[in-house]
Image (cartoon, rainbow, N blue to C red; front, side, top):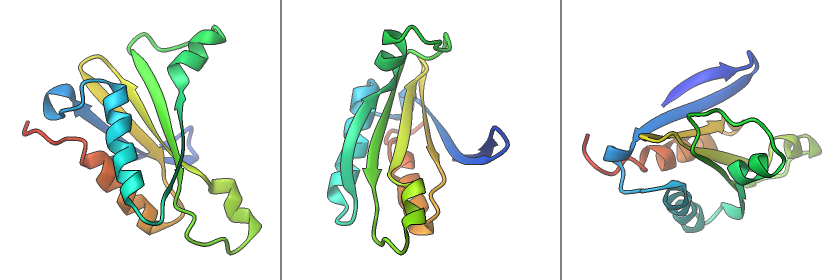
Length: 131
């Protein structure tokens, strides 16, 4: 995984997974694999899957030509609610874009290291075939 700053302020993790290195054939399969990890975690709640591609198409928005499909899976670790400020960084989301020959998986760095490590492991686990 690569970590970078998006727009010089958002810490983002990115992973590109060649389709030859995963058993996932499409974004639905990637989202299903991530949802299985979310459902298996005793402290994580699945919230929704958002079809970003369909939404952007419906409102006649702009989509990069290389993006063939794009979804977000939304969930919450929410193991504590120490103050109302943490609501600003919840829930969490992992974005999945089908780029034709690979999937681009990305998420905003959570303020909780345990969540970061778990989300990173979920994304890396998508590459389940040898290169």
